[in-house]
Length: 404
Image 1 (cartoon, rainbow, N blue to C red):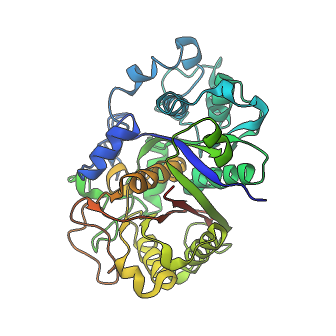
Image 2 (image 1 turned 180 degrees about the vertical axis):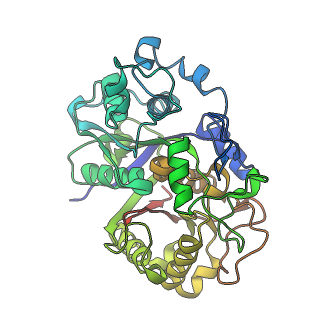
């Protein structure tokens, strides 16, 4: 028998705040976290802007991680570990309540941020700093969890894939609780140059706050974000037995490969459509029960167009009545962390029956005519919601969350 999987904790570290509460408030207010890059001097780069994590993270992290251990982690790894520790603390997760061999940690990570901007890397710690499995390992060590412990790297869908893997473990009775996380930062000159060569990034350096404009006619590429997200999943029976506050149900998911092109999505959004269809089937609901979508919404020409077309094919006429948002319009594209950050935001939307706006949508693309919630936050009745992640390499993931 498949067990119900529920959410008992969420947290984020983003350009809008060092915790989920601060990020959520700023999302509702429609505030952009995009500014000129401060981690290094971006002069000479075509793109000189990013949604860097809000100042104060290093000082904040010191209350969680001892100095000796911090030296063995990159700034990005510390984000991933601190985000989990704050979630455990905030939601009163007692690691000793569970059988340790029934607890897992899965992270989605593209890289650890051990780039030219990372400070304090030496021959003594370079290997530890470069291990992209380090985040899940550090969290597992912190709590003594002896269940599955690994990292997934599927580009922008990494932590959404991690969510899917965690669902599988709990639903099939291989684990009782899994901490799922994602953390990433590609705010460094080498990767920005690479994306500039691909013409993928916005170059609107004069108006940073307006640079990320998903679904807009004048969108000119995505804006790099950085940060971490964590979602704590449990079997419903375990959560209820210990008297946990259940935030939402994780109804199901779909993980697919487009097997089409290393960077471009399938024409007309066919791969995106099939992913969303499969997720809804897996969740045991119908397409017309979907009340909200947190879109991949990258602010790139093809993604926004094809995602819109896929939603229309999925929902038919109802597509025009389903509020769609892009969190990336404010926190940027957080790459490997996007799945858990946007998943956490979707869960918060279900909890509060409210969605944040998609900012900078002043000049709508005539082909993109759905309800992208462009004016301001909105009260919405949400029973079921989708969170999409569509990545380079054709790695697609859709997560389905439900009101509990």
